Structures are given as structure tokens and as C-alpha cells.
Image (cartoon, rainbow over all chains, first blue to last red; front, side):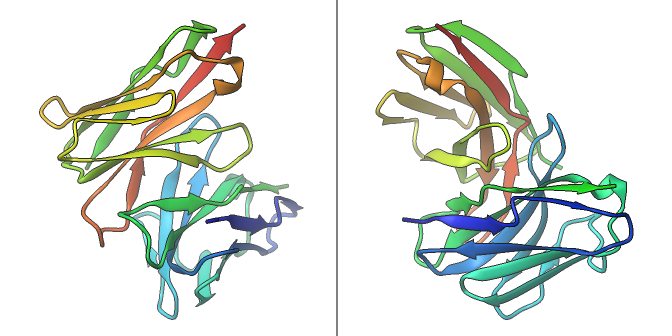
Length: 117
Length: 113
């Protein structure tokens, strides 16, 4: 149990286009979903926290108008990178916190590799 | 702001030996400390969680210690195997309801056959 999926796993896009990444909890309901970004040889950096039915909370330095997050249900959150630029190329990982889970145990998706040309 | 450091970027050990990874933190008093495994191009996989009032936790060949005075956690893999080769991340969080997980920089472990 506690499986999180992401789609797509890889995406290549042209500069200036928008890309949507989906994060789904497959076998549990998630009160909260998190979006992280990981650059090569660096650790995961939290971008934003989203709760179902409410606005996402963004970390300092993360532009909310550029990284649009929608958490429409207890099993789905989406991250849209708008007007993507090469510096947005990174590994984007989501995680989900289970509704009746233990303290801060998060289940991570497999990640989405975004390359902006 | 909180700072989390893992002792070395890379660690090589011989198969069968015990691997010991270190996680040190400053400017933070976590309620929980977690260890994750991450393989290349994949998301982290949860391994163990230890609470601030716990000194040690074990799971199969894994052992984690947590010293809140030293602000340090040690992660041990006994009888290491080549399949244990991966990057290991420590992560800290506050009390339940504080959502954020703060990750360390990771240690890339290679177990040599």
C-alpha cells in the first residue's frame, strides 16, 4: 500500500511552453501533497505544500504564478510549470501524506524529469 | 534557518561490512528524523523514522540512532550487500501538523563486491 504515481516520468519541452505534472495517491487518500525539486547531486528542496480544496503554500523564493498547483481531490495534485525556461529543467518529485498516517510519514512518487530546451 | 549535513558525499565499503552514515543538524529541534533511500532517477523510499524521545530503532539490517544533544543521527547497514548501493537521505520534521520535511544533502553509498 501507499503508492504514489507521477505522470509523465519524462518530458521535454520548448522554452516558453507550459508543462503539467500529475501526482496521484493510488491506494490511499492524502490530506496533503508536497512538491519538491531536485537538481543534479543536490538534495530535495520543498517547493510547495498543497491541501485538498485550498490554496497551496509556497516556500520562499518559489514563484506561485510560475508553478501553479491544483489539489482537486484527496488523490490528485497537479503542478503546472508555466512559460518554462531552461533553468526550470530539474527533477520534480511529489509526495503524499496519508489521511490517517503516522507523524509526517510521506510517500514519494517516482519523479518527473523535465528538460526545457 | 535549519542546516542538515550528511558526513560525506560518497562512501565506499566492502560487501559484508557495516556501513555507517552520519546526519548532523543545526538551528533546529526536530520531533522526528527519517532516513530515505533514493536510487538514480527515482523518488526517495522511506526506510525508518525515529522520534526525539527514542535513542535507537532497528529494522532488519538497518539501525538508526538519534542523539538530540549532539544533534546527530547515525544510520547503520549491517552485512552490506551490493544491492544496498544507493543514495541515503536523512530528513527532519517537527511535531505532527508541521508538514515540512527538511532533507540533508545525501550520501551516495557504494558496496563493493
